[in-house]
Length: 244
Ligand code: FPP
Image 1 (tube, rainbow, N blue to C red):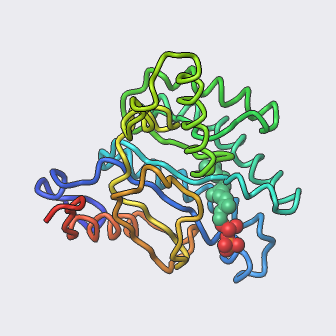
Image 2 (image 1 turned 120 degrees about the vertical axis):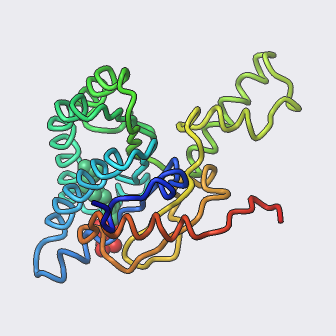
């Protein structure tokens, strides 16, 4: 039976291929309940797990989430520690369910400053999930859009300096190939929770023509029906990519 979280065959043909999400509002969710902010991140990581499973179930190809930005290190050490711990816990549990659900997990960002245990777990996850052919989940970790663009420019500049490329060979396509997201189509839809109307250094390059959907709901309160509503709102849009 079809309900508001499943899609008709006509809708399935028009589903976005790639959804990205700014998971905002964990702190506010906790504050509203008189809990420490870290409780909001715990709940938020459960919402992330449910969201990824829902995306896999409806046949989404790519799901990219902003888990930790290059600016998030400015938060209190305890909060940073809890988020790193949640990522570790998630990865440990995900290794089994990933194989069962055919989910591939990838990581966008500079992983070098992450705690050693988390980095080793990411390497293990990477190796196991490489052969998965279902939903690809990209977790942006120590990620910043400007940093990613600067890194791409630097990598191309090095190739120019080495005589492999000429400056005029640098095109948007070549830049795209140097992003963490190389080979992944740009997000069709970027969802931001908790009502904030900004991009916060998320996928600056990739979201040039993405449709935005902002909801006042806090990330931990997001349900499958809320994601379906965002997807239906996207399907009602007229995308022109600068044309008529
Ligand atoms: C934004 O809410 C959320 C974050 C900066 C962290 C997101 C992290 C998780 C959902 C947990 C770990 C992730 C995974 C992938 C397992 P906020 O703290 O800025 O909320 P506020 O704006 O209400 O203060």
